[in-house]
Amino acid sequence: MSIKKCRNKCIFCFIDQLPKGLRKTLYLKDDDYLESFKYGNFITLTNLNERDIEKITKYNLSPLYISFHSADLKTRDIIFNKKGHFRAVDFLKVLDKHNIVTNIQIVVCPGINDGIDLKNTLFFLNRLSNVHSIGLVPVGITRYNKNKRLRPFDKIISNDLISLVDDIKFNEKIKNIYLSDEFYIIAGKNIPGINYYDDFPQIENGIGLLADFKNDFINILDKSVIKNADTAIATVKKTGEKTNILVLTSEYSKNFIKSLAGELINRVGKLNLNFNMNVMAVKNEIFGGNVKVTGLLSFDDFTRHITSIKDINNYDKIFISDIIFNKEGITLDDKNKKDFRKISGKISFVKNNGKSFARELLKI
Image 1 (cartoon, one colour):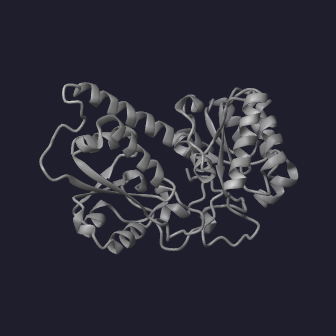
Image 2 (cartoon, rainbow, N blue to C red; image 1 turned 90 degrees about the horizontal axis):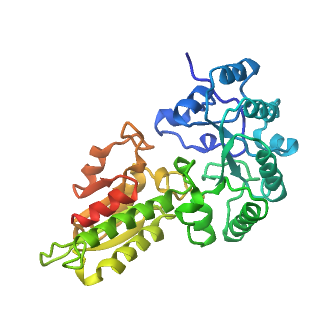
Image 3 (cartoon, rainbow, N blue to C red; image 1 turned 90 degrees about the vertical axis):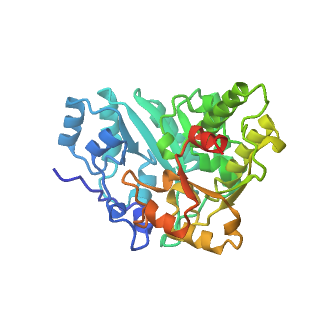
């Protein structure tokens, strides 16, 4: 059975903003409820019919992941740019009535579905009984975007959004709203602690990823310090010259990774570290625009950056997160780990979680 494809023409569609020459699967616009049920892919419900809804309820295909964006007819007209989109609102009500649990995604676009519109959408979703989570993510805009109505989040708009959501969570007692990590980074605010994210229902959507990463990182450090309490250090090897490590990450993650190094120093002392660590941000040239997350960096982006570092030979190890690969180990621009090691044999790929990163550092 073929995958149901999306027929929307959303103004912020990231696939429509992709350059040519990337991994072929990236250009597939799926809007299939079975993919949502099996893999957590977000669907809009706009491309479904009554028969599809009957199948979902009959076989209890729950939970589903829904891209909703707005409950307002006029706003949805702007966003979806497709006739018949509003039936998705009715379909969501039907699914909810039949106890289908949903995780909602709202791509927030400044001046379009933020402010009062967002507030009303959140109130609408709160009236439903089986919405497990509502995740807000910022619109992604690449250099290939042709819709001039779209504009990226800046520090002021991000702070306004955070304040709005915090007020709703506190005053209206709507606890299942979660903001993407990007909003806090853009706003210059600290990432909330792990309790904010409950059971991390949308961590794959970049919501709570950093909080979870930091928590796991610190837990591993603390266990190591206790284990080596007799020497009061985590990295017990001392072999003269220190290992020089280079961590390559995204513009959004650079300061976060640096802060983890600070956590390590606070626990073991700078003089006791067996390595020096430098963190560099790799600029996303393949997409450009406001795309600054690690998972959307390409092989070409890393190649460009590594070859531009004059003292690259001074580093003993180069760490890169494996989040840049899909499940088959392929990057956005269709390259694999062997391609990276042709650039440098010093490159190591670290699993994208705090435990793995801490353990990599502690075994140096």
